[in-house]
Image (tube, rainbow, N blue to C red; front, side, top):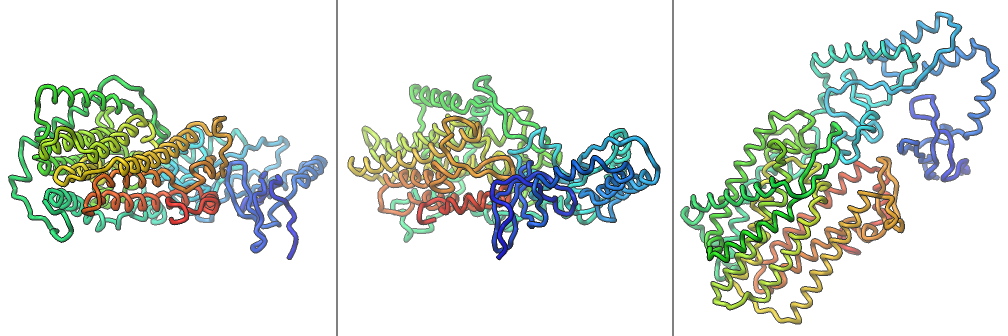
Length: 619
């Protein structure tokens, strides 16, 4: 086999594919089987080149020195050849490239004594739909975190005349660029008035996306199945024997499911939390960049809202308000929250119909049913009030803690206890720590998939307002009617398990957030990374070198610790562990798909370095 000519780390000149232009590149690796070099350009682009397409730097220096003695006519001929082989020359069907080439050929025939000052500038075709990143071919919204006003100018837009993706350059005198831009702007106006070609429509329409959850049929099943599953769980939990042998539970009457007063109390709860959100307290931060480069502002006062809510609940207990009313009307509250989430979802979809295209969610598809489920608009707002951001943490998450407290009081009343059971105290304490941690680290929510990728539709509305407060509190609801005496030695083991999961969860998330904010932080200098073509780096040591998703591992351990205080008499308290496992596996697969599409070869190297996804040596 022939020996390799260039070593790893060597800086050489690499030919850009489809052109005769050479650029400075760095040799990353060499594949002896394919005899191809993996090189990286200065802009971060990684490509595989043949050895014949790579030249040493000194060969270009010799050419440059030799060309100084050439005649003017030879310089003109050389310049014309460069122009004819430019990588920016479009196929024959492209009208603009043809006109630019005609101007260049006309100028070659006219002898000129002056030396033209040439500038290499990207030729940007105006957008018709979503723009495409020329380096990896993925839609621009897939790199929402990486967009800035600076690199926004470096993106190539899909041409309405053709569907090919290539970097187009223009070799023109500086004084002619203004005239060319005027011509391009006139042509763009004419093009946008006409119908879109088939290639452009197919590249920009969301229907070509791989829809999650089984597309529209899957969305319908989930929208019908989740509420049914919720009420079956609550009805089964109320039975004296909640085993699988007594499934399904008897259905309640309409009076047991709906009460207008309960609906009014729920609306009062929602709008009180909205009032706390609007209070002028807490710092204001900017979110990740949007498609147009803007950054929305968010008010971080979730922890203050929790403190105010705690004060209101404490005052209610002091004044003798019967909070056990929530327990005795738990099904009615669940139905009221479900109806409210559906009404909110209808409003959100109607509101999204007026939203501009660049404000739509990357997950939207164009299908009415699927978009109603997944959410069509990315950041629906009423003025400065961000509906999705508000619902993510406030009514549901804080409501979860209030429901747990109600169940603790109900246990003391139903079982005639002077103090709550140890199992109930552990469940309340563990889940309270989880909620307080989320509210204290509220800013980390701005970089999650829910905020930067998913729209606000039925999926998040039902999940935030109904599923979280009424199913995450299932262990506490179970202990009210099914007491379990827990010994202190066993409680100590469960506490240790909870703390272990929390340490993994919090340390992994803190390490990730610190690296995102400042990768050059001296405190993170010991961490190893893999550089990617997007300009970002992937952590391959620390918690993120242990497994690919250590925060999910911590979540699973904590979920198990929440259920263990309920004992092993029935499977029902462990529904949350099963559900959470399925949820995290789905999220992990979703993250894998997005990261592989975004980081390409770098993600494959990361997966080789960190083979386990969530559970070490298992998965």
